[in-house]
Image 1 (cartoon, chains in turn brown, red):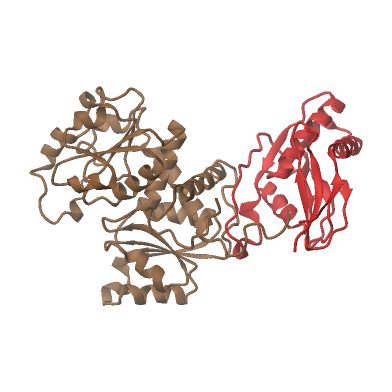
Image 2 (spheres, rainbow over the protein chains, first blue to last red):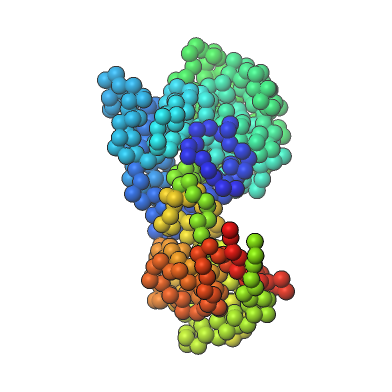
Length: 314
Length: 178
């Protein structure tokens, strides 16, 4: 499968084959990370901008390191220290960055569709690093990469996503990717945060956590997104923990080889007990390592030109 | 698309046997020699040569595979290449690396391969073996061991189909595109 996209805006519009192409490419880039020299010249001379209008450490640093390992120059742009504070529009900010010859713009924004908006008028490639509660495509790709590495397949696996689904872009991107690759997806959490409407995407929705985790091969825990909730969606974090938190007692009900995933940042003692976050079945830190490889792969792929893949015989 | 036969299975076998002997002749200390095939045709070639060389030297010859996608100079003008695994499970420092590819053309792949090898260490020397040299070099690169020199036009294509174990269907053909 030849990657022909200039942007990575969401998972929804990708085909299963395109997802597999990213994963295959990421495998090669993961190997680069274990060499003595961890840098390749693929994006030498390119300028990558991290346009983060919403705070993030993990994703921003991951993209930053990914760009550096590809030999690109990277500029970090945060909303707090920018002219957006002085009233500049997103469009003008992006145009200014392009006037500085940015080749790839990685955007995180609190508004759904912000990356799609930029992609409509920019010549640069646009990568979505999270737009509102809509999508976070590289997170889904690194989750798929991690599951494949551990389980060898996606098709036929039972994946349970537990927590705040309504406000989670990670959940939406994961649901798209998992369904496209043939997994069975179960969503669970407080009824206010897991609307039945997700059943229309092809997911199973349940409000009984024991039922949700019993047959799961993968349990993906999501943080309660305080910052995105407009009204109080459940009485208290303590109640959430007692009803839905993953503790030792609940872990005992799961399959012995079920993996625990979390996109981070984790709230120890809220959605996950501290000891479970650190246990042998938790792949939370491996997700971070794989995130770097996946983001290198995405940068490499969107950077491609337009000619035939094989310009000439070898 | 009209095609001309360049090498049949027996001729491929003879060419590889000769290359193996030339490599053995050139490199007296066989323990210092490692083979690295360029993805993908070069990897088949490397595995096949390793068998012949192993019989000549009576010891196993280390074989690695190298993907040059991340080091290419034409990434801007083509869709992103499919990246294949790079596996070099041995130390190349102070070794003689015999780099292998099926077809030598512009020389740009070989340049990228030498660049990529640098990330793994500093070999004592690098030698280049190819099954077919079709000419049209764009860089000052020359093969040390050549299976067959084939003069070609730029609108022609060398098609190599061969297997690690050698099969009766193995063939090298010259194709002319419209």
